[in-house]
Length: 229
Image (cartoon, rainbow, N blue to C red; front, side, top):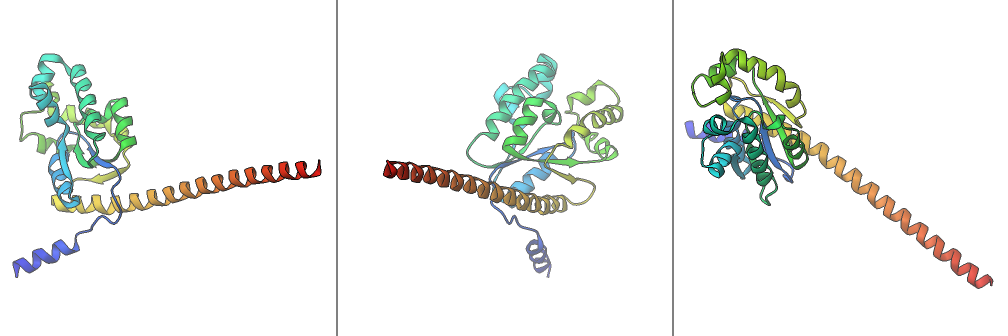
């Protein structure tokens, strides 16, 4: 009976109805669930999940905390910019979990918006405080009161996160529900993008046909003038 229920739930889960032509990047504050949600989303889409912070650590040979302490945030952002650019320009599509401040960098934000589908996992500050209190690996939260820091970060970053293509609430519910919400919104977004693409293609064909007609008309006029002479 339990197996039947699990299979039933799985069959009711939404599926992606359109081809994924770009990678997906997840943005949001620390504790928003970019890794836990990202891993599940990638599994559902049958593509690889990658974490930009883990890739930065592998490239630098230091943890994120160590990079902040030894070299400062500016150097970290430079390395982050290079790593994210490498990850989103590879041939294979991925789900990319980004660091909380990555989308705040104008160059990184521009690349992510152009080359990926950006999804903001939006979470209330109270829940972020609860989640981040379970781990002592957040460099920015070591500088003072975590609630005050997270509140200030939310005030600063949420207006920028609004530039994401898709916004999904990532609250107290099951992770699979958030993944389902993402896929529903992805289908809606991709349907709109498909219509835009078809309209662009139709305009290009119309322009090409118009140019061809103009060329034919000029050729006919030239032939008539030669015949008249």
